[in-house]
Length: 484
Image (cartoon, rainbow, N blue to C red; front, side):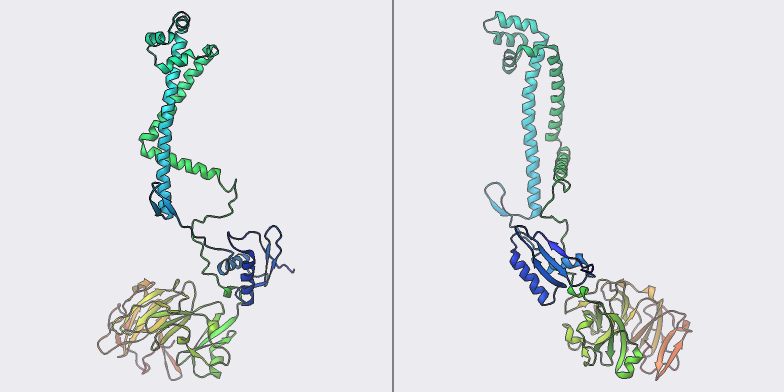
């Protein structure tokens, strides 16, 4: 139907009831947890369950993985390994212990088998050496057998043979006395000696024994390879994790705009809207971000924590904006410092009121936990005050007492989490008020009233990390804030 595919299931896990499985999948469809249009049971004596996706654009592999995650199409089957180690004492072992005991058992078995075969070879060699005596003194031995009353004792006495050799000689058939059998006997002796030497090496050389066991197991693996036999139950070398699969990725991706008010409240608008257009209708909006519905939002708070929220959960349209606290598990006194849409290579510079900071690698910061992640380790009532993207060459720091210091961003460490280093020296009674990331050719910028000011000649304020800085430029704004 118009290129629409179907997924056909012909096997289900051990001990899983087919009817219950179909009910599970049907319930997931009803509560809109899985992007299936219908599920059909076409089973007879063989299982045949047909899954119909909502549309042909849905990735079939991801869809079946979502089914594995939410239903009994994939299960974990637990095994309780109670064993008798010595045939007497019961003990519960893990897989590693079982494999170690198996290896020890196989090594012991190989050595026992080697000793048994060495003994067997020695007995055979004893007989074959007796045959060589027969071939050498055939006429004399035949004469003894024909003329003596006790040929067995005479042969033992004359040729110094063992009882076993003598009995084997007396029991020989005449057909074995031809020249060809003498040659074959010598070849068999040589072959048995080589085998005995090999087996003796197995019993005496531990490294040789281990290598032999490895070769034996490799041979078994080759004989039972998937090219010859298809396993119904696949043993995986790593744990299959479907936790990163979510129904949201199957939904249509739409454009959205996230807006932030002066009070730090959040809401969204459909489509990508310009800041000026939103600002003209809602005066309290101070910041916007154009995103897509499948992007997550990172909320940086004054406590140094980062929260991940879904923009689709935020109020939209004409609804009133809400505080981020409604969507996360955080202290009510925690304040929103910055919001950024998540991206794979996102790196930001974090700054605290006591002048600490570092470049944060945010590639793995996303979390589904409502309590978020502690990113900045703050001490002594320190607070996160600014978060800026780390894609520029310089960082400007300004203190509450009007001290400006500009440093290069390559002086900062890149961390996934930490307490940072001193960006600007902060004296008692002072605090870091704001930071701005910029390139030298752009200069620093700030706002006075409705006018934007810019200063490109910033060499005077450039210094090294942890210095106090110098007085801000003339006509800098009174609230000592940069223009974002």
